[in-house]
Image 1: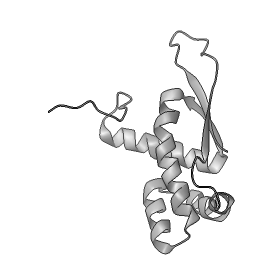
Image 2: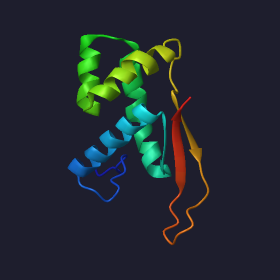
Image 3: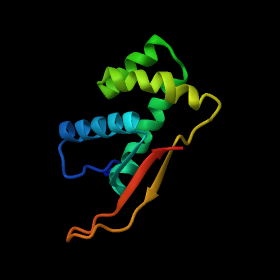
Length: 117
């Protein structure tokens, strides 16, 4: 039986879509707040929530999992040294999506900020 797809494709194949999510996750970890489209922010949230949960348990296995998801040593270091301990007592909900006004051009995409709480 054909069920509907849950993930958004963003008009990309699997490889470029994975690279997009990796790049957005890396930017969010390093900058702690980024501006993107609302759909991309909503797709990024589960990935970031999982990475912060890994960072709360500072083990070698969680570092390797996070490194494979982010692909950047600097971002992994910041995630485990500053972001993970910040949310040690928090059970979840590490990010917040704040919707912005519409873009002024002709594409009318909905924009949003995604940031750590």
